[in-house]
Image (cartoon, rainbow, N blue to C red; front, side, top):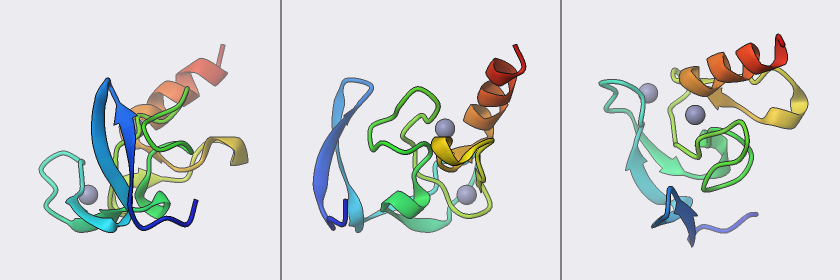
Length: 87
Ligand SMILES: [Zn+2]
Ligand SMILES: [Zn+2]
């Protein structure tokens, strides 16, 4: 997945993704300039997967996931992943 530009569907909407795409962190009230590379992705799959929302976040708003298989997660998805695995 080393592509600078590609498009993915997220919530039924086609978006540009890749580390060549500049964007702003999707965290609350955050204006950090980032790109849509995998390093900033919530979850492991562009567009979202079971645990990740597919959002893009700066280092302050992206947290190490509960296990290696989850990838890094935003605060909202991390809370949900923890709640799910506690069952
Ligand atoms: Zn998320
Ligand atoms: Zn941020």
